[in-house]
Length: 94
Image (tube, rainbow, N blue to C red; front, side, top):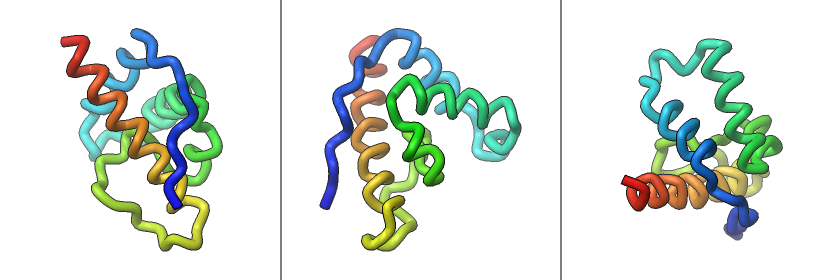
């Protein structure tokens, strides 16, 4: 079962922060600053539960690493759907 993300307002500040964080290389995503900013993004998008389950709109994987019986499996799909919306919004804004 895939849940659609709750309707969130994708504002310019959300897009700006998403764009900034999405450009950070994987090798630099372990810093406390990155984690704090990624949590802020999750909070702005109403995805803090998903963030605590180790899922994020910043995840570039094409499929979840969790089995279907795990909550993180559904959370990954929620974040992935919203990631695609954010990427589309960025493209439309360009």
